[in-house]
Structure formats: structure tokens, C-alpha cells
Image (cartoon, rainbow, N blue to C red; front, side, top):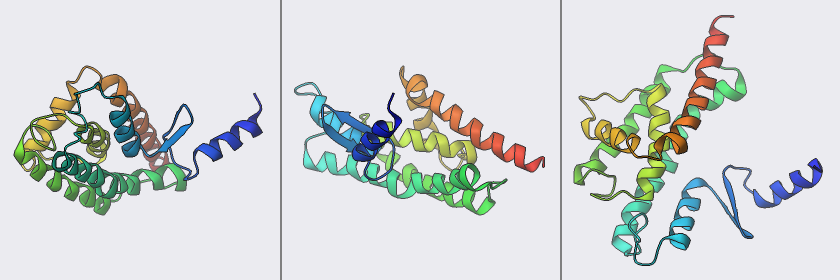
Length: 188
């Protein structure tokens, strides 16, 4: 394979230097949240928009939860894992764990209206947020007495038939890498 050509194609597709990037027959879409909304809009069966409703009020709630994920949850996880992976840090600071746990409160309030983040139906917001929350939980445990709805929501999402393949396997790899690096550096 021509590595230079592949690198140029990747740069052309991934102008923001982020992953994931989707190439849907020439339509380039980056950022997992945008990819989810794009795929739901484009490929949802006719008349079934439950994952990403077309109704503006319902969609606003889904979008708000997606933005909460990319604006509050994911950055706080990143502040924990990036220093370990890229900068040789050998511990996860307690203040970063506490800061991450504060984000759980917002989700707990979202779940007051039903079993899922926008009410009684599973949406792309749930599917996106579970990736962040399950990662967060590995470093900043969710206190069941403080966040009972969030704990129940995590269990509901983990029970989905596609959860293991689509989330757990990658989660285990990331958590194993970060915790392994921390352990290795603390033994030095």
C-alpha cells in the first residue's frame, strides 16, 4: 500500500484531525455526534425517526444531550486519559475525578423525565452518552445513592444486545491501556 497516498487521503477526509471520520460514498462526516445524526437522518426507515426525531421540540432535546456529551462529559474524560496516554503522567488526579463526577448531576436531572435522556424512548443521545459515561465510570465511579437514575440508565444501556460489541470492547481496551500505564509508571 502507498503510505503517502493513504496519509494524504486521510488528511483530506479528516481536516479536523479527529476520529472517527465517516466517508459515506464521498460525503465526509467527522465527529461521532454529527455522524450519528447524519446516519439517523439519512438511513432511518421511512416513518421511524425515534432515534433522532424530526419534530423540532423533540430533536432539540436530543441535540441538547449530544451537546452536553461533547461539551461536558467527553472533555472531562479527555482531561483524565490524555495526560496518561500522551504525556507520561502516572496518576489520575483526584480533582479531575471530582470534576468528572460533577457532570453526572446533569444527566441525573435529564433522567427525571423517563428511562432515557430525553424521556421514554432511546435516542442517539443515549447511544452517544453511554460511551462517555461508561468510560467516565471506570475512573470516576457513579455513586448509586446520589445518582440512582443514572445507574439504572447505565444498566439499561448495557443490557442492549449490541452494547458489548459496539461499546464494551473498545471501553475495555481504553481503560486497560490507561490503567496499565498508570500502574506501570507508579511501579517505577
